[in-house]
Amino acid sequence: MKTISSIAFIAVLLILGCIGKQPDNNLIDIPEKSHDYSKGKEIIAATFSSLSSELQKSMHDGGVENAIKYCNLKALPITDSLSQIYNADIKRTSEKWRNELNKPTFDEQEIIDFYKSQLIAGNELNAMVQKVNGQNIFYAPIQIQELCLKCHGETSKMPYYGIIKNLYPKDQAIGFELNELRGIWSVRFN
Ligand code: HEC
Image (cartoon, rainbow, N blue to C red; front, side, top):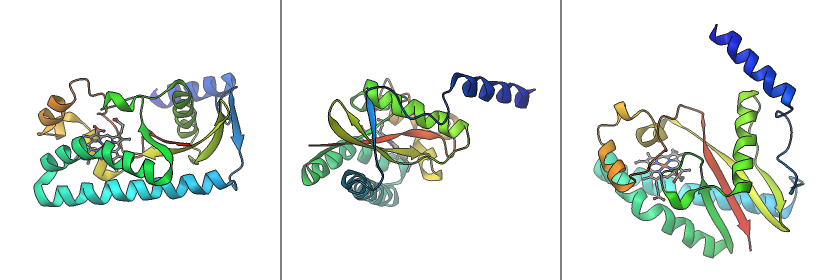
């Protein structure tokens, strides 16, 4: 029964033409070989490696509780300082956000919806550059890996969830499953 309703759901999406379509109207696709595409890739690789090496170090030193405090204090300052180095606005955003400052803009939400439809269709999620209101923006998907579930998975498996909830009373970034779309990178070139 579940399979039949999922098939019906995918069929409806196909009929509506949501799948395989690039995000909408005021977004213009820039080719993968462009300078901003490779620059974007380089920037998110550097930011990811900076965030994740610090995260793993703080987890190793003081467990998940310590790592939560680390993310709370350091995630935005790290992305901000890399933004200055690269002369670009580096942002991680999600429709199920933890920190309200990371809420998606209208255009970012369109990209999130696009990636979600791609996942449902079983397609690979690729990075892209779009021209939005005359400015090039690099987008890339962020998917859930095993480690992420420690702080973004089921709350019943997080005895320390109270610490997160205290820091982020409006937290929505829970209940994710492996491989699910956690959010996107959005890199705006200055
Ligand atoms: C130790 C706990 C912890 C782990 C593990 C963790 N996160 Fe987070 N995550 C946080 C916290 C806390 C924030 C809020 C940071 C802030 O205040 O900017 C956050 C924020 C984010 C955001 C920014 C959007 C938002 O919701 O505010 C993304 C995207 C994200 N995490 C993805 C991941 C991914 C992907 C992984 C695995 C590779 C991961 N996280 C692992 C605790 C964690």
